[in-house]
Length: 469
Image (cartoon, rainbow, N blue to C red; front, side, top):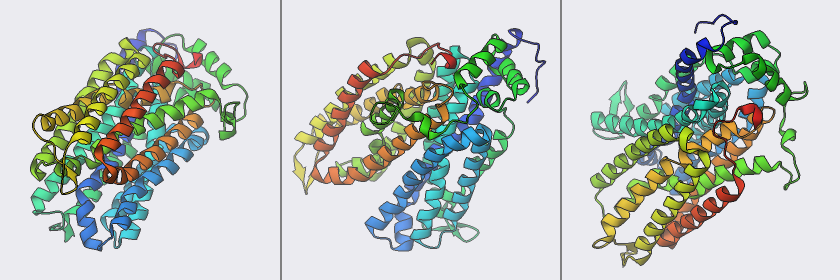
């Protein structure tokens, strides 16, 4: 990308907005891989089980290994971003995705598949940290919310594309365990398909500029000024002074900088952790990881269940677009409150529908009006999540921390998010055995808590410069 004359200031900011959008889209490719990697295994689960004769427990561990890898990748991405820069961490994440795709595609046992999935998970975790941090640091305050929301749009688009690719490969081969190309079964090509977006991510990441906040921290002020002129605009000299002020001392940031008086951490770090945990504890990934099995369990056919899953995925994309259009006008906190209130109502409806349904062969059978009511409630729940907690949490995590601790604090918050995701995903089968009414009642409870938490603990960041955080 061309470098502007450093003496150009406000005149370039309007044109720079277009450049900034393109750069943010490249960074958000990490989110696309994040969604693609976590969803692509859905179409391969049964085939992996049959190919390796895996027990339910071992199969579950192989699937969940990616989530544990994500927590580890997120934890280390922050310190690495502080030492090496944001761009190099993107390239490392792309390399991890590539290795995982190759290893998973040629896996010879369920155990080495789990290892390759763990490695891919580390790429997911790194991408989940670096994309929101980089986008926040490269964006003008007036459009930072919209650009930050590209991360969530990329995630849900990646999920949709993974489901689409899985469907296409199975259709082409006639089954996930059927041979497709080069003597490899279709399920292996599902994993190998991840190599294409991973390669694109790695190449494109090398074409975008380093974060101006990182450049200032490394005392590369001429480069930082050029990046600020082209992508952020405004009085760049004042911005550089503000960045230097908020970075504080010359010492590199570290995890120890997050220590504070509230249970060992700074209060703002706890806010980030709780935002991440509540995003998962309202049960959103139950809809994405278990929706097909869930709808079959309550009477829908396999084909209709898959159609519902696709509709839900498309709904999530559309509502994320709504969030992108409104977040810099309505604000972060109001969207979170709206989302929490809507999820309380819809999850409560699901809890009532499943909790009062008669059991047939040990499974709830939705009868009469309850069947369409549950279907509508589940999709409206996705609408409320998609226009609020899905994108807004990533935007806030990217911008709410000050320059000195941003990468480190985001790493801790993202690691907490992946551990929460792992907890919800692995406990749902147990909760399902207790009763779907109980499971959705529990998620309703956390939706209520999320509303109270936002009302009391989250501050609005709309329109504020990062240096004022």
